[in-house]
Amino acid sequence: MTTKRVTLLILAIIVIASPFFFPSNFYYRVGSLIFVNGLAVTGMVILIGYAGQISLGHAGFAGIGGYACALAPVHLGLHPGLAAILGAAISGALAWAVGRPILRLKGYYLAVATLGLGILVSMVLANEAWLTRGPDGIEVPDLGLNDVLEFVGIDISNAQFWYFFSGLALVIGAWIALNLYDSPTGRALRALHGSEIAARTVGIDVARLKLQAFVISAVYASIAGSLLALQNKFITPEVAGFMHSIEMVTMAVLGGVGSVLGAFFGAAILTTLPQVLTVFQEYEQILLGLVMMLCMIFMREGLLPSILRALRGKDK
Amino acid sequence: MAELMQFLLSGVTVGAVYALVALGFTIIYNASDVVNFAQGEFVMLGGMITVFAHMAGLPIPLAALIAIAGTAAMGVALNKLAIEPARGAPVVSLIIITIGASIFIQGVAQLVFDKQLHRFPAFSGDTPISIFGATILPQSLWVLAGAIVVFVGLWAFFTKTLTGRAVLATSNNRLAAQLVGINTNWVMTLSFALSAAIGALAGVLVTPITNISYGVGIAYALKGFAAAMLGGMGVPLGALVGGILLGLIEALTAGYLSSVYKDAAAFVVILIVLFVMPSGIFGRKSTDRV
Image 1 (cartoon, chains in turn red, purple):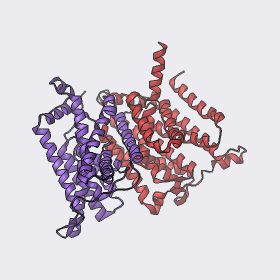
Image 2 (cartoon, rainbow over the protein chains, first blue to last red):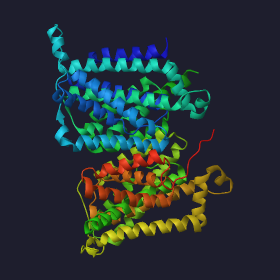
Image 3 (cartoon, each protein chain N blue to C red):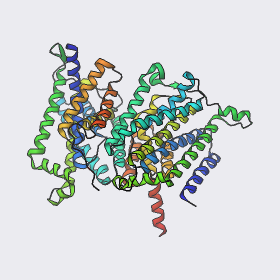
Image 4 (tube, rainbow over the protein chains, first blue to last red):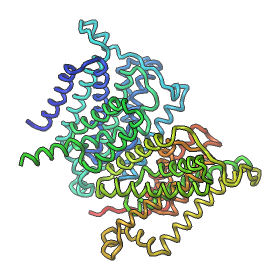
């Protein structure tokens, strides 16, 4: 079986089988958060892992996606589901418009430009209180899908619904990302990751491809933001904040940014960690900082590839 | 006119702090090609340690000295424990390591100190000085003087002393520097100590004006990073000019446009500068090696 099938199979099994081990409804909530973060991080895999570009501002797109679901139903009368698509379109358009000049930059310069972009979005969300109700956040209408399910006879709790819905979104997102990996575009992206100049000499339109990766990852982040807002039925500007951008990059790199599955495990670990650490609330920041540093120092390719390599090493 | 003067004065004061942070960025970036996102935590540590040493009964100058020395030791520890083991790691990993360090230091600070806002008395009292109808706090002059002294000191260090030139040589080409007998590890240690000390100094100077708490570091890091980028990464003059410019832009935006968007102004300017001249005002154009 190909990596693609294995990855999708593992993800599907995780989504379907995990509930058998859930002692309480609360775990559905954590699981669905993991899937939503996993979806956003899959976008980061395309941007960082495939194309080799960095962004410290992708939370901005998550913010756009989330606020689209809060605002479009009220002001435009759109269904929340359509609002999420509108948010994705806006995020994609913004990424396209800003990406062209920004993606000429490299390394730290690209980092600071994307960081600026993310901070600007979060500032607008926090300060335009007439529209967004400011830093305290705004409520988001119900998606209504669970009611439809109930109508056709499937009766599950809200937490369960969102668990499976986010899980489905993650599997679809992973499927698209994995297809992209093997497509001509994916190959070209990996080629420019290796060396931009070499990629250019074999006729790859480097600027256009980087822009594509940036737009796609922005759409992923936006949809993840929408899902988060819809299941919480509430959103605050913090979702677009700098720390959330950092979280997204860290999740991706922690697990192993080269693979969808690795990044998913990164998302799972960093999402679960704060829930586990509530016992040591005082030490939460210290532990988070330590985990970030230690993983990057001792497992540069990320957790999953490093562990796999260690296992293979033993086999020999 | 008096209004404009007032905005300019407060802008230059804030800008001087950014300039100090940016200078700290520049030193480490030159020595190691690492952008140290924990730079803002040095500012926080400088202020917090001084506050707590002062509360323990030490006079402010001694407390400040302890804070600067302690923060410098912290910088060395950061280099030895986190940066050196990760040599050669990609930019993304280095960004995460230094941000991890920043979160870690914040966590330790809120545990060792507390979560309150603190300040200590200004060095030369709080009586404002009047200039062309605008006023400036004596402490602002201390901040400005601090930025200028550090800049001139660094300039002298890098151009007049053998050690400073060794740092420059290391930044140009690490291998070549090693070949002519420069201990590049020591250069790294020195750079982190120096950079942390400058950050701590900024914290000591600015605390009587803006107050300090365990969480202020990340904002200083972002602004200092933006300032360094504005002036041109790795150029000390760029850091100074970039910092002051950023402070002025913020103050003018807050004064004439909108005070809630003053932080946005910095990033709008950065985006524009990066679009128009991607290597900053004083930066050299970078080329790729194939």
